[in-house]
Amino acid sequence: MFHFFAFIDRMRFIRRWGLMRSTIPESLTEHAHQTAMLAHALVLIENRRFGADLNPDRAAVLAMYHDASETITGDMPTPVKYYNREILGSYRAVEDFAKDTLLDKLPPDLQEDYSEILNGEIEPEWVYVKAADTLSAYIKCITERQAGNREFISAEQTLRQKLQNMPLKSLRVFEQEFLGSYGKTLDEMTEEES
Image (cartoon, rainbow, N blue to C red):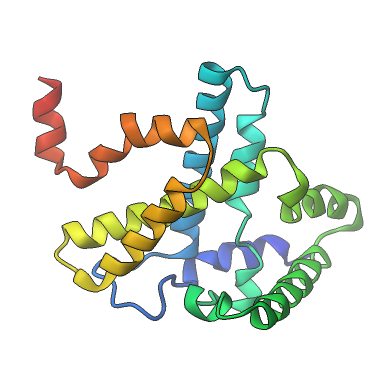
C-alpha cells in the first residue's frame, strides 16, 4: 500500500493565509488548481505571442504539485518564511525532507517521475509556475478586497510590486488582457459581453 496520493489529497485540508483573517478561506488544493491554470496560460501566451518553445502542460503539472510538500510541513506564513536567510534556508531543508518523504510513499518505479515534478525548479517552465503562484496570491488579495476585507491591502501592494518586477512578457499580457476581470462582478462581466 502506497500513501502518496492520499497525502496529496490532504492538500484540501491545508489552509493558506494562516496569519490573516480571510473572508473566503482558501485551501492548498484551490491554490494549486488556480496556479496550474495560470501557469498553463502564461506559457501558452509566451509560446503564441513571443515565439517561446515551452510546454504548457508541463507547467500545469509542476504547478499542481508546487506546494505538495506542505501536506507534511503545513503552510508557512510568508513573513515567517522570508524573515531572514537562516530561517529561509532551514525551511528549504525541511521542504526538501518533506519532498523526499512524499517520494518514499510511491512505488519505486514512479519515484523518479514524481521527483522530477516535485523538484521542478530546474525546468524552463518553472519561472512561469512561480509567476503564476504570485499571480494567484495577488488574485486572492483582489478577491478579499472586493469582499470588503482590508486585511489584504498591504499584501496586495507587496504582491503587485513583486509581479511588476518579474520580466515575463506573458505576465504583462495577462495583466493587460485578463487581470482586470478579477475586480468585476458576474453581472459586470456579463453586461460587457452583450
